[in-house]
Length: 82
Image 1 (cartoon, helix red, strand yellow):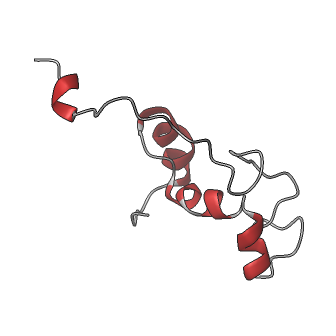
Image 2 (image 1 turned 180 degrees about the vertical axis):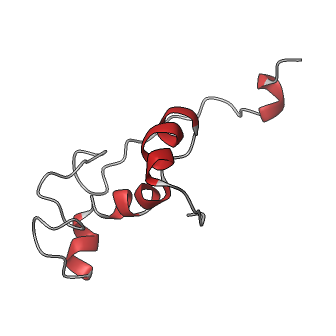
């Protein structure tokens, strides 16, 4: 995460609308607060901000990331618009 100094108005409105990066407080906290392992390791109470009852899950179960079939190498140069 990057350090930043901002006003609440900027963080809530302008940054969300114009910046490609999520607000700093959500870059890390948003990710780890949605993992049960984090809550268990740091003993976060159920229903707290760091261990919400409703978690966002990308995979159906832990460690179940789909295997991606690699068909060819992609190179950044191939996708440039000259």
